[in-house]
Amino acid sequence: AVAAVVLLISRIGDTPGTDEIESLRGPMRGNGTEKTLIIPETPAGEVDTLTGTFTWKSEKNFDYFLLEVFTSDLTRVYQSGKIEDTLIVVPDSINAVFNKNRIYIWNVRGFSGLEKSVISKNKWFKVVQKGK
Image (cartoon, rainbow, N blue to C red; front, top):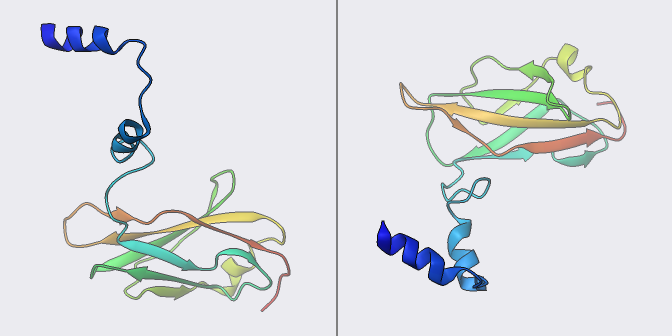
């Protein structure tokens, strides 16, 4: 403990260098080192039409997936049932919920047995022209 205090006192006034900052980035919140096992693909960004098909890649064989879609204020507008493939075509009734010029955020969770679920990073889309 004394050594830590001495080290801390000796470092006061030092400005961390680029190498020191880079070495801290991995464990810092929001910049995890864990590899993303589920990668959302489509829809993404501004889309002219929304076909209702959501696709993603999976780098692990999961038993099943769940898709969640939110508005930009994080109100959930859709949660799927169990999906055994890396795509889903949402029902027309759900597809009709996605309004023109509104941003939506979506992600996918993967489940394997009793293991902790894995969640993808969020992906966003905005329909600029509604239709099929």
